[in-house]
Image (cartoon, rainbow, N blue to C red):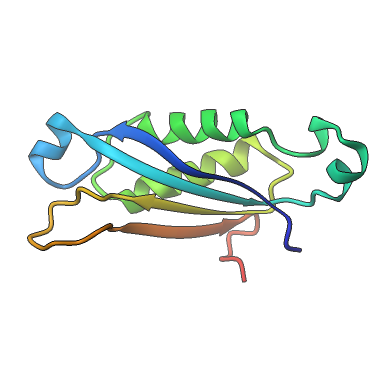
Length: 126
């Protein structure tokens, strides 16, 4: 299936990171979320109950990402994926990208981060 609900560029301020100053000052992260879901019924009926609300996606992802401090963005991304799969039973799989553009790297770069993919069966999609 190729149906997807997505939210891109969700900016969240959090305190994730290994460095002490990251825990104190925090930084803005950007999340991209892609949720695989069968949208055939939603397309046919035009009813919100046959899809997942963007508002729900943003609320659940924001709460999971900001609820606690993670040393690794991998763990924060995993928490987001797990929370969305738990709260949105119609979602079959999810892809979470966490951008950390202010990562403490001694180099000039545009972006750094992680991408994780999870399915209900615990396997990585496609």
